[in-house]
Image (cartoon, rainbow, N blue to C red; front, side, top):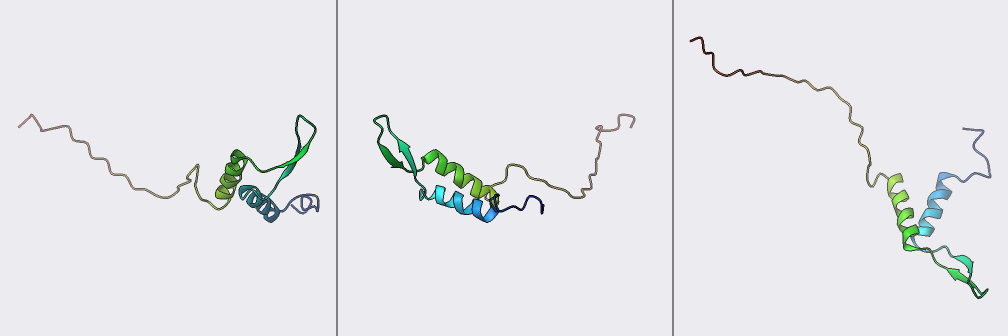
Length: 86
């Protein structure tokens, strides 16, 4: 992990900050239109939803898979009906 810890790699805090900016539509990008004009464009709803989904997963807002472990005692009783030999 120490080898991975490099100033060129975002920390989890930086990732969460960026995702929050995206989710809140506070990041804009410059886009060149067909006429050659440069305009600032906000974040799409789809990108905002994805950012919110990633933030929610980080904080356990919902769980796709539940890992449940533990001991369980099972008692099985077989009932073959009444005894016909009586």
